[in-house]
Length: 269
Image 1 (cartoon, one colour):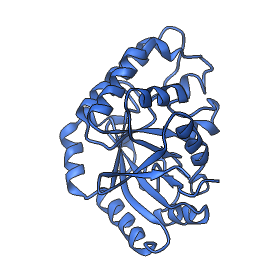
Image 2 (cartoon, helix red, strand yellow):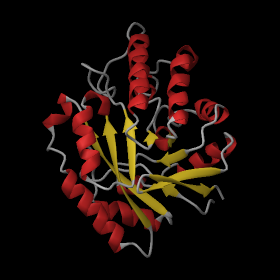
Image 3 (cartoon, helix red, strand yellow):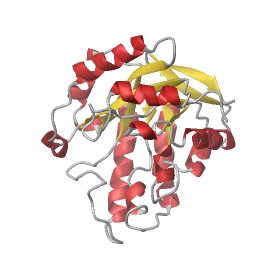
């Protein structure tokens, strides 16, 4: 059992696919004895996300701040956001970032340009390579843009390619592009996320898997965040201890949390 547990990836009802209030998420974190939780609701760029109720960033931010104040003497609550495909509309995303004093921003790519979210795509032996090459190209672009603190679920498409369709992916084929992403993260002092959601899905692994986390460390990576990617209160903290174990096994003595966008190292103990 680890003492310093933080879940830096969670979604409340302000996310289009969220299910519980910020208050519910924080209370779940308290019950599971976390030291801190970041509410990182989705702000995704793309036409398919427009079908949902518009994301109310003002209301979401204020609600998280209320939780931060309400539970201040019990748990650390961090005001966060997950910006999906920020490179598809940099101006809009940068305006959002400047509107609020976030503690923590996750950067991610859920869909490449002119394509649906990887969750909705169908995969076969002919399209996987094309899609993944484009995906890693966009991750390189996202890393270069750099308007985030931690890169979320680096191997996101594999969650569905392998987990849902049973198509094995040899990530070594894309090693040069993955290395390019990691190099930029290191150069810009950005964190890499260990996303534990895959441990409880068909893929049965973290996103990214341990070899990439170890590679990031070997290349000089300093900052690792861990997040459950929970969309339900009862899944808050799911896999966080396993994530701590993996971080330790990959050469990290610390995990990273962010307060007012500044990294703070927390001993793994």
